[in-house]
Figure 1 (cartoon, rainbow, N blue to C red):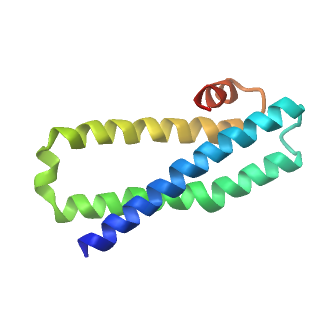
Figure 2: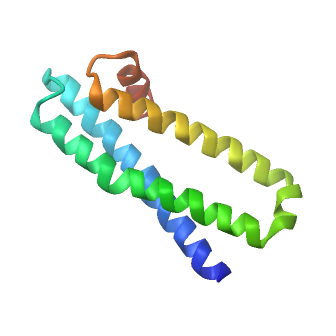
Figure 3: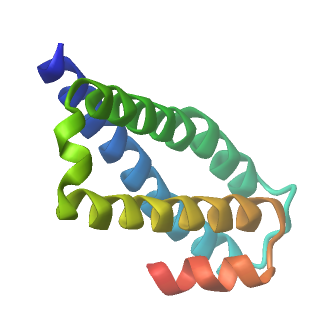
Length: 116
C-alpha cells in the first residue's frame, strides 16, 4: 500500500507543480497580449487549472495524508516540518494563480509573474 501511496503522492506533486508553472507562463502571455478575463487564453488557463492542478493537488494532499497515517513516526522528523512549510507555500501560489486567472491585472498576477 505504501508504494502506491508514494507513487500517487509523487504523481500529484508533478501534476500540481508542473501545472502551476505552465499556468504562470500562460498568464504572463495573456497579460502581454492585453487579453481580458473572458478571452481564449483565460479559458484555457481555467481548464488547465481544473483538469490538472486541482486533481494534482487533491492527489498529492490525500496520498500524503495516507502516508502519514501509515507511517506515524515520520511526524517527529524535522525534515517533514520543512516539507509541510513548502507545501503551505505551494497552496499560497495555487491561490494566487487562481485569482490571477479570474482577474487579469490584479496584484496576484504580478506575484505569479515573479514566480516564472
